[in-house]
Length: 446
Image (cartoon, rainbow, N blue to C red; front, top):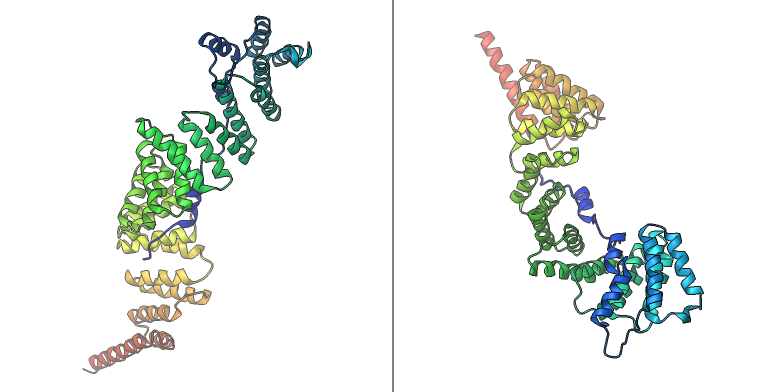
């Protein structure tokens, strides 16, 4: 039996990347800049501004601070309209010139939060752009805002702009974290620059490992996809083994089983799929049929038969002609002819042509049910579509011979012999038939 490789549907799971789009949640934005810009401002003033050598951050004046505090209080109470009204008044009274750059940055920072809360990402982006356009704002504020801008571009699926914004952020920060590298990897994935995507997700994974931290499942999944796309089977397997170590799931057992097959490691291929099966993870009929094929490939037909029997009985495996045929083949190889016959009867009845009736006749012959063999093979030949009618007629001749229907046996053997592939065997059977008739004649005469 050929090694079965369910390539199409396994590849579909390997090509599926569960988390690749950068989804920026409200909590992530709050963590980046904070819903509390004023507390951050006060902290900055107490510590002294975090600036470059030439950057001097202007002070946040008390009257401005109080108005911002009211706007922030309204935002915290989810009164976004009230918060926006306060900010509008701050901008309109005296114009922007009435506020220094740091005060304006805080105003636009809160505007951005309001727009984001309303899911108006375009306006949120413009507001954040206004934040970083202000001169001499604290470096930490600029860094955090640029990171948030990159996230918002990704939320809007503006991948290249998100990449560019993130690269600008990388130039400012001294210690980029692993999440930033993953975000960049996801951006490169979306623009199909898989080499750069892989470099960045590998960087993130290695950073976590260096700190004895467990890399996130979706990071491994992105790496797994990218290795598979590059045709790096060994690295794909290594990544799947890491996933199974820390995040054991059915999909990873199924995928690594397939990849072991690509590596010609048939024993590991069977073992991985078997591990999933014995844990009752394989709930889909296609997966169970794959399991049966792997048992057959591993010369364990009895277990293949049991898998098919259980699935067909509980309905998880669809009762198609093909699936009953697989079950019949498994039981025949396991030398359980009764079960082989029962399944092949089902398979033949559901088939559109006569091929399976021909094969059913062969099993009947093996179990010495000669009359049933004759009926099945004749039905198959009359239906048509038998792949080797010459072989079917050889079996038919044997069945007729065993029921002492010698004339019909001779006719079947002669018909089989017209095909050169069976001519030799047909001639041998005809000679044997003649010798048997001669022996019987001598017995009668004697």
